[in-house]
Length: 383
Image (tube, rainbow, N blue to C red; front, side, top):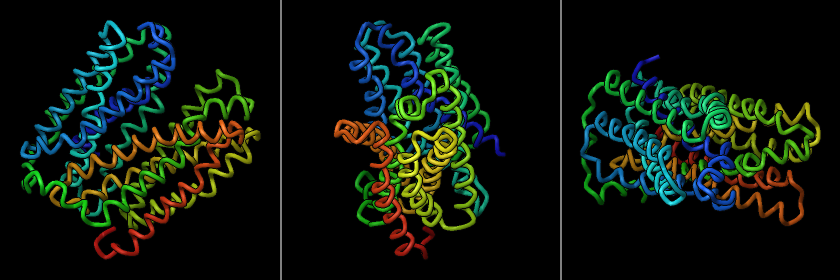
């Protein structure tokens, strides 16, 4: 494996802990700054807002050499998480979380281009999957470790550790990523020209609906597993590690398949599988031995759908490649937020605690249709 890809994966590992780690330690953080859990939930939203704001800001740095841009973004990861660890009150912590989110989508956007530039011919999707793999590994190792550190020492220490990983990524990028020239400048207006075509919107649709289908269930995996499945609260530690392992597996396998077959076919087929998997989770929620493998398959589909599309968007965002790549992360984060609301809505309708999984099925179907239409219309162009 190329050292340059390891450097990129190390940064996405830090980003993965920064994003998902807060979910596991929200109680401690909220108590630490003297706010309710509900108000503390804004800290998760603040990070997502940072992702949405930071991604379009890439156009300001479009003339910067790619390596220099990656270093700037990795440095922001360090600064944002140090600020988070040292925040004295809720307001400053909210600002720190927003700053921490700023480099997230931008790094994936720039990183996808670097992966494409550095990979061997026909290995682009695998290279991007390696970078994205850092985030999936964070869910298996990093997030549980952050939760442990928070419980034993302090939640502030957890974010301090994220800053250390960010610093390590900065160093590795500086040492291992070669200098790459800036992309040809198409001007401010030219950055958005790719959005006039249907292909990027079909890709974003595949990400948004395909991943939202799984997130409807994943947002409520704790109560579904404990209240419906009969697992204990302590069981959720290893269950979440199983969920994270599914992410790692799906991302890696989908990346290899996407290099061998078309990206749209692989991701569309995975979205179609979720049309079956989501109802299966709902109807077998009380069957322990079935709920676990289905959880693994569902999260394999989650990152299996998103990873290769992070690579594909670069092909269909000519003139605005970084903005296009960052847009995948916006779609990812927005779908996450909308899924949580949708899942809560169907539960409040009285359909049962496992009903968010059932709500995910039609969303997966929409995602699959988007990707199969993409394949039909743009297969000759490499979709």
